[in-house]
Image (cartoon, rainbow, N blue to C red; front, side, top):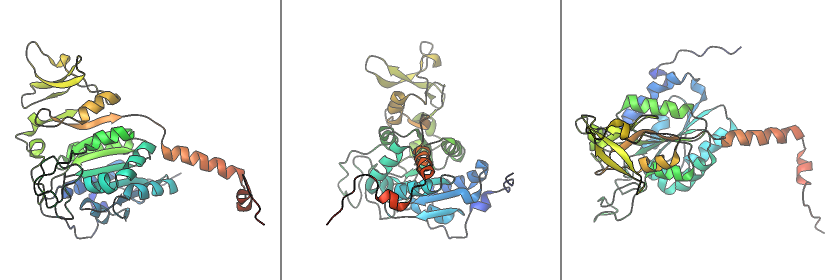
Length: 336
């Protein structure tokens, strides 16, 4: 009979390391939310592993009193996959940013998601390279002025959740750095999911991209610029909850409508987190024409890569073949 888990608190997951982020950085809020959430998962602290790459967000493992790896640029998904395969009992978290995870690490991210490795990816998206002094990133909007694009970026930005959908991720969600309650719910659901959970967190960089998410973060504005999606509920938003999203069946595109006597909530699009086509449409909504969707955008039950790999390992172990037998198996040649 296993011993009962000790009662843990936020302090059990905080380290004595000096936190080195700029004042006002959204990473502080995310860190505090995750530290507070850890005890609620009711898992042994020794089972938690945080893996990061390079960037401001990648300092995260130093501030979590758990196991962790600070790896090299873009390689966190590869290292995290190895950790999970070596010990499937561990609960593995990938901490990355829009540059680390989607530029140099884009290929690793793609294959982690398509394999459906059973771990959680928290992608901090501030639409800029913060650690290396403000160059535009894969998610920066067209026109972003930076040291590497002084006349404004002409690159079309990636949309993280859309990319995750295309890669075959089985859990995709979006939240906001300072929305602790919402972020906790989304991350907890991601942790409960068996497979790759990809969570984009809109995060403010007060130095190089301050205010880019003001519309969805400012309490006076947010109601008109974001919509919280919830499975089985209509897409309603607005300060007066007087606006909604409909599907135009002729063009198969979304449109914003005003709720009136003629247009009721029952006429609006109802969120179905198991519908991939709907997730594609919702994940790409952005201002100024559409509100940004936050919440669980897509979820699918599918066999985990880790489970399937372990089954193969167990089958191989039952054969109990020696190394010499393996070397001499299959096609062999004698060289004279």
